[in-house]
Length: 543
Image 1 (tube, rainbow, N blue to C red):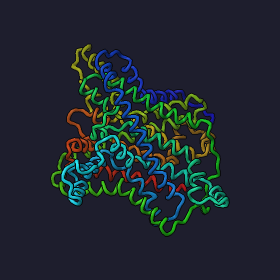
Image 2: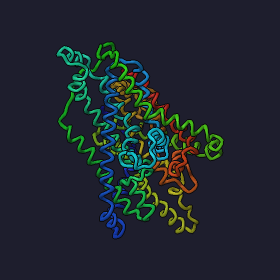
Image 3: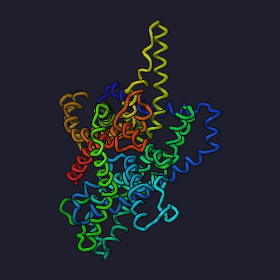
């Protein structure tokens, strides 16, 4: 729509976008600086292994997530079987579980000294490891399985929505042509859901590339762990920046290839309407298999790790319920809440400008601001540390110039830098949620507001924000839980003596003592369940 938009609004949008992409610019600039010792050594020795492990890990996690998510999504969306309504929302619960916690739980269960192998040795009278073969849990394959169990809901959610939106008339046409459920799925439902599956696979791949704690715990060298080791062990920020740039190139190349592969694919269909019959009623063995598959998936991905966490927390409650627990919980809550509010504010401003501006150039800031989500936490930490360190030193130099004692590291030495990192990384989530809500607001309401003489600020305050409440609340919840779970950025950027729940739990995991941090892990999981339940209810109302 055309509206006389004040120049200040456009300047504000570009300023916000620049601040969000500034770490990426700083990272690229740092990577172009010369490094004559560390990076050449890495390039000639272990860098090929880092890249190979990262690519293989992303490949297997995506494949594993697709294999376990697609059947579950199709069963829930297209079939009637016992427990279907429960599995509709319950299969989203693994998203609330940190991957490194799941990795610790299964390592404790499946290691040589764990109950599973002990039981096998006792039952078969095996004496030594040479008497039998058991897959190595702490391996690239083990890490891929752990990550797939936690990340498959990304694909499940998008695939389930895509299957539910497919026209019932198309499904009925396949029945008339003699196609059973399997042929209908293979020839119709799956091809039509490909765009949603591609988006879900890209999300899973980016989350896998960003994972640090799981691969570190399993001692699998990837580009993420290489960045951390190069920064802290070799003390070379430039070499770490070069590795980070390589990681970003891998991520952007992967997403670009996926979009290129389906650039000519266009899909037009009449969406399913309420009351249309487009589901299969499963009975007998098929119903039991469907219920059993969803139950097994939910048990392995969420129920079993959560029950074990409860056992740990109960056994070590007296040791865990202390002042540190409350201090770190408060740190997590206020940082996550502040970052969520800022992200929602950024999303509202950028999408409002995109909505009312007649200039196509004003679409660019919201797109630039969404690129932060592609930055893994370790990469973002380097990108944000470079400019903030320069600013800190500049402030000190100015203070010395005027004969005043410098304030020290007021940016990089405080929790402010963590809040900034969270805002840069997760602003895309708030932007996407608010953008989705804006699509449901008729442009005629804007025209009515203009006719009544409303200025942009009043139009936003009196018309848009009341109609955006649902999207704002959803974005706030989703960003909040992501901030609660985010580990790499908090681990690398935290000031001395500062801990939150994620770093607190990870310390116990890395020390093989999750029992002492189980109560904190349960808090992270329980907080994560709130937005998942809300999201599922929203989807049910929309469908």
